[in-house]
Length: 227
Image 1 (cartoon, one colour):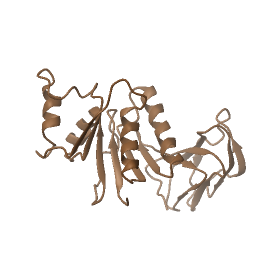
Image 2 (cartoon, rainbow, N blue to C red):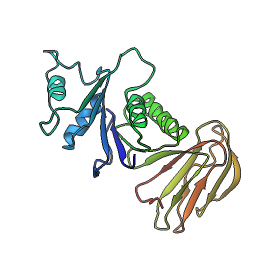
Image 3 (cartoon, rainbow, N blue to C red):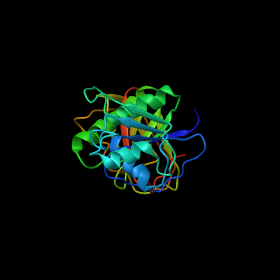
Image 4 (cartoon, rainbow, N blue to C red):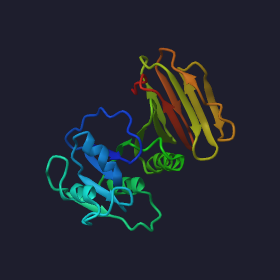
């Protein structure tokens, strides 16, 4: 699947300007549907246990009932997946699992940071879940983008500006190398307990962050451009 899967969680919405291309998929995770509706988008899939959006079809959940009955443009939902509230996966993780099964490998996560810290941490874990399966997710937070890289690299163009931080997400990460940045690392063993990778800077050169073994969390700002 060559398109991008856009997943909307129920947290604060950052970076709302986006374009949905042919072949893309939009998934609303529970009350993340409200963001989809506010942006005038159409949800291809609505998934969740509906503890936040409300149970569809109940007289005392009028908004939720209308959400399930009609899409934001008056179209019926192509697919609704009701999850058991007693489950191991969060609604967002369930959405990612569904899209992975459909063949998507590129993901954008909105409404998945801010609000409750536990939810933000869970969604950072979802980035690692994607990386472990050969996919790549980008989580759009307040003025920052988060992504995870496993046994691989992320490259930035020379026009990138602002800070970039790198953290060990899977225990000790071996062979961490940062080039083209203000502070260089070469074949470094990065550990969660010693966050030496925080607050590096772009310096107007092509830059690359790579890891030989392990999963990195990379955080950068809106003035950075991937290459």
